Length: 329
Image (cartoon, rainbow, N blue to C red; front, top):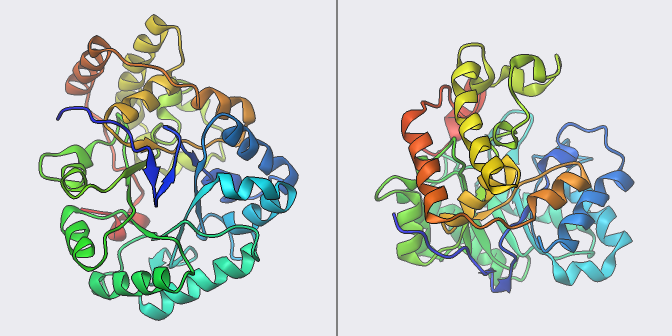
């Protein structure tokens, strides 16, 4: 697959080559709002103006939308600089989507209520496809919300090629969000999600470009994870899987050392090389600044990374069993 340019516009607005994922700022709680907005400001100051938020990133009274309200209250002039993508229509307590017309409208209305006029929603995504609702019905509702001016556009998340084509036939999406990293490359399969989006001219956004920290270069043994770290319950961090997966992380680290940059920068640059806008996230301003520094991969660099991928097996699913039902297949 030939590399293509990373999107420069989404929802009709200019975006930087690297975006910012907000999940960790609110999902686990414990970060005061005044502290949480610091990495957000760092992201924008370093050119990351495409922000990805979610109603599922934290409890109903303390998720991304509440943090965004706090940020834009503190920095009202930044509202026009940010291209805001929000995932919703999803019950985080039961891990189930509700993409019925009523469910989508309720989710959008709640987002707008919390934002309270501080920022518009440039792009709204149903976080997962709802198997109980034809995707055409969900998209018709989202298209109506665009026409009503409640959202600027809509996107798709965790979808397959068929979903994309069916949605596009009703109303073209402004973006498709996928999981993409050197560890997770399923969407690159011939005729799959990436090919379909390129054919239809849909920008791609890549979440988890560091595969939940694997490609940050900080894991050598399981002891590097705190005893209460949520990742200890995830398949790729299980004993046996961990020891296999660390080999790929070490190969990426070799490329980074040769180039004089970090493993994270190499991993993010690889996603950019696929023509996909990566949205790494962090709770630390210094790590955000690191992630936003563009690194150029040469043809030799890409070939070396491909050779590492070809000889290294990634062991374990990308999500635990509780989340599998609504992942794209």
